Length: 205
Image (cartoon, rainbow, N blue to C red; front, side, top):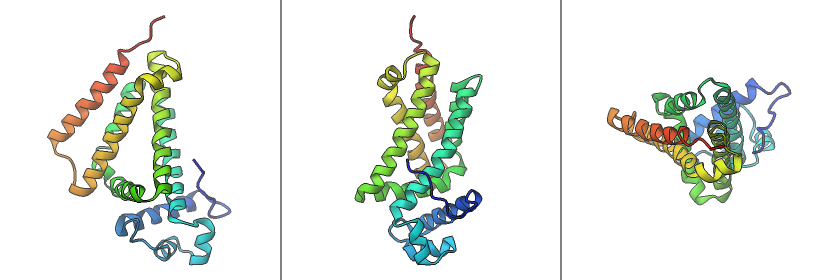
C-alpha cells in the first residue's frame, strides 16, 4: 500500500491532522458529496496546492488507509509479542465493537458504498483487507506452529469473517448507535468460537 504523502517538511503530526480533517469531511458530507474544494478548505490549503498532494479522492482514501494500516501494524506487533497472543487479539477485536468505533464506521460505510461504484476505491479497500488477513495469518501460524502457506490455506475464511464482523458492527453502530447487549453477546461468541478453534488446531510434529 502506498505510504501517505509528506504534507510538510516535518510531516508527522501535520499529516495526521490533515488526514483527520479530511476524514471528518467524508463523514459529514459523504464520499460523493464532499467536493475537492471542501476537502482543500478543511486541510487549510488552496485547491491548487491540495491537488499537488491529492490528485483525486481515491488518493485521499489511499492515504487514510495507509495511516490506518500503520496503526494496525503496531497493534499486530503488540499481539505477536504478547504472552497470550490470542487473548490480546481478542481484546483488540472487541475494542472495535465499542462506541469508539462510531466514526470509523461512518467512514467505512462511505468507502464501502464508493467501492461498489468506483474500481479504484474497491482496489484500495481490498488491499487493506488482504493486508489485515496477512497479519492475522501470521499470528495464527505462530500459535498453531504451521507454515504461513498452511495457515493461509486453513484460516483464510476465519480471517475474512473476523474482518467482516468488525466492519459490519462498526457500520451498524454508525447507522443505528451502539449494538444491544444481545448482539454484542452473539458477536463475542462468534469471535470466541473462531479463536478457540484455531488455538486447538496445533500442528502435529
